[in-house]
Amino acid sequence: MDEIESRIRSGLRGLGIPVHSVYILPGSEKERVLIAFKSEDNLKLTTAKVQTALNSLGVGEFSVPTNFERLSASFLHLEVVLGARMEGRVGQDAE
Image 1 (tube, one colour):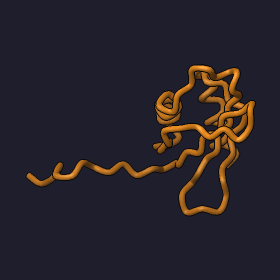
Image 2 (cartoon, helix red, strand yellow; image 1 turned 180 degrees about the vertical axis):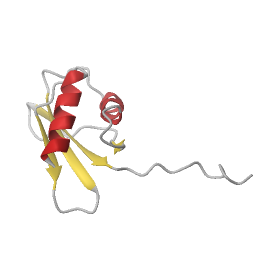
Image 3 (cartoon, rainbow, N blue to C red; image 1 turned 90 degrees about the vertical axis):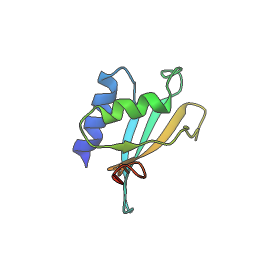
Image 4 (cartoon, rainbow, N blue to C red; image 1 turned 120 degrees about the vertical axis):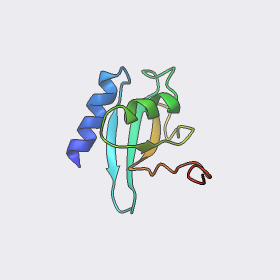
């Protein structure tokens, strides 16, 4: 798991998104990752930008919620799901 954490951390930093820490959350059927960002370093950060960056890393498909959680004054936290299933549109294969 340390390899995934370091790939996410270095990949996001390489794309211009400063990351404070990345943790794989144990004990769930889905692989959940908690990412912490320093508030002052990421004034224009959006969840859409994080999702695009994560999915461009080649680690897997990520599902990202639409908002950050603020657990302290200094950090933004984002819990993402690795290996999110991509569902096809309804009726896509109906023809």
